Amino acid sequence: MKQNLGLGRCRCRTIQAQDNWAWCVVEALHAVLLVRQEQPQLTWRAAQRRAAQHTEVYVLTEMQPVSQQLHAA
Image 1: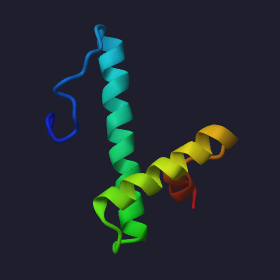
Image 2: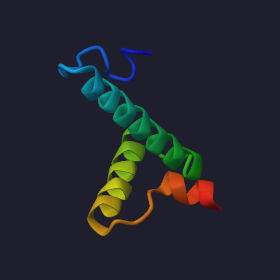
Image 3: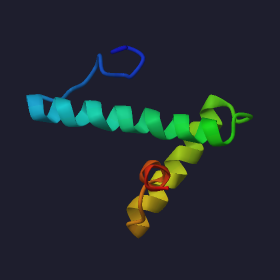
Image 4: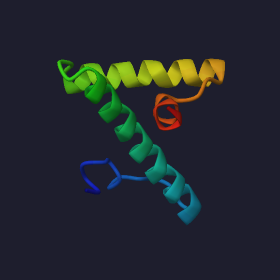
């Protein structure tokens, strides 16, 4: 799991930074999985791009992330 999530090369020095990094990685994976659920025909790479676009819109506009919108519904 550590290798698949890219946690093996975490360069964070404090335990809090490592914890934050791990949560960011898990949230990113979750965002890609949500995109794949909505649009199963997308390749993994295309789903990554779409999830990144959703995240960029969220960060720039302060909207709720897609995962929170789905949980609220």
